[in-house]
Amino acid sequence: MNQGARGRSRESLQGAVAWPATLLKGRPRQRRDLCWQQRTASAHELWLVIVDASASTRRHQALSQAKGLLAGFFDQAYRQRARLALLTASGNAPQWQRHGLKASAALQPWLDSLGAGGGTPLLAALEQARDWLLARQRRYPQEQQRCLVLTDGRLKAWPALQPMPCPSLVVDIERSPVRLGRAQLLAQQLEADYRSIESFKRIE
Image (cartoon, rainbow, N blue to C red; front, side, top):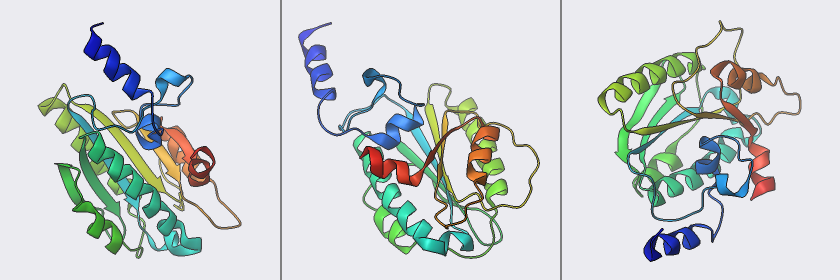
């Protein structure tokens, strides 16, 4: 390793842990698995974010808490120079907000205006996201993809789901006193890592 590489290595082990980026790589088991807040990153990274903004996420400020987590995630994407794709699940059908654009401060007004309402087209959003990722993999085979799903899991019964085609993380934003715990089942079927939104407060 040359002198410059050693210097960058030392710098990368300082500062705050970038938890969204870390967890999108999989559950960390040792210190070297952690990502640190910095302005450099692996080339060609894409982070796909699926946000459940259905009416149920208004309860107990679930979506408000999720927006706080997303603000930190978007900031880290900007620092990592990752591209972002955003898909919201609310109303009658999922809506694409971004398609692989570079993260920037322009995302903040969109995040501020994000509100909850309508139905829960999350299953349709997951299907669209899977097809889009697979098509993008064929177009950009060297791209490193990650998927983040924020949901309270308040869905009715659903058929078995296909796994996402990249490392994924489901963040459970359910906040009601009586919890159904369906987001964890969703994560299992997607073969994704699972965390409750409260766990981010404990580790930060």
